[in-house]
Length: 286
Ligand SMILES: Nc1nc2c(ncn2[C@@H]2O[C@H](COP(=O)(O)OP(=O)(O)OP(=O)(O)O)[C@@H](O)[C@H]2O)c(=O)[nH]1
Ligand SMILES: [Mg+2]
Image 1 (cartoon, rainbow, N blue to C red):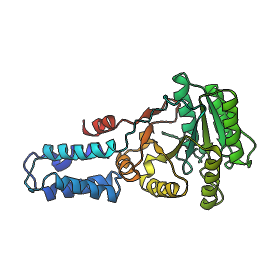
Image 2 (cartoon, helix red, strand yellow; image 1 turned 90 degrees about the horizontal axis):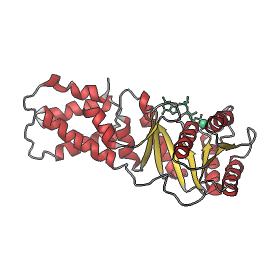
Image 3 (tube, helix red, strand yellow; image 1 turned 180 degrees about the horizontal axis):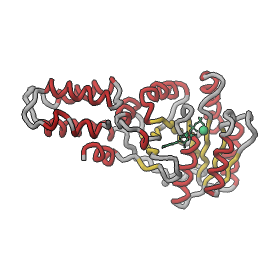
Image 4 (cartoon, helix red, strand yellow; image 1 turned 120 degrees about the vertical axis):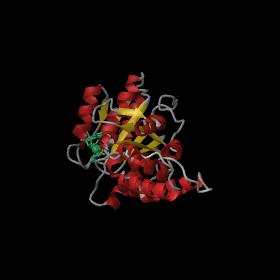
């Protein structure tokens, strides 16, 4: 059951006055079951109690209105005024990083599509030289979009591919160079070292971490490692379409304390939409 359905069913629609403790207990369960992390759930409940320090009773609608305000504020914290389309530096270099399966390669395609649609020119770099199939996966996106993909053979140096991609974009005066990376190496340690090197060599204008909304709690741990080891500017949260529970985005916004630029809502190239807290809140509370 989704967060939305759970909130709708809260107290079986009772409209009498309820104690704050009763409400808080109910919210606690609902939030945790919807995949909001414990840390974020506790924060939400602290805010909820703060909103009613006199500890007076309230009805369900008022409680939900307060909860909506708190959740909106959390999502608003991940807004940013960064605009992909208004970057003068040429090429503007975007590096995608993240654990395997979080949608990096797909997002390189989606971002390119978004930029092309808005009249920009793009080159894509296949710097995941580790996973069998990763290069072809990106080349297929490139063919479908009519975008040049810079690649070398499997096992080649990812930093060299990134460098070539940027050089190509520079020589052709392209607007953007978007670089895919591996999500898995022999060991995680190697992955971090490799990413550091790619970042050092490509000097990205923007480093984006992709996370999977379905695996929010893992994602938070992964993000902490990526932040410590490599650093990133913001996030793209993928697979929001498959997240039946719907609570992960709140932990991601609350705990990462980084901008979320887009959310991924499917596998297609146009299945990426700008991060819009209002829309997410309306979906849950409408
Ligand atoms: N439903 C859904 N599927 C997605 C989304 N984004 C990516 N996928 C799918 O998730 C799978 C993994 O995506 P990739 O882009 O290959 O992920 P990756 O991070 O590049 O993975 P590695 O290369 O293994 O590190 C693919 O089947 C994608 O089509 C999304 O927003 N929604
Ligand atoms: Mg990939």
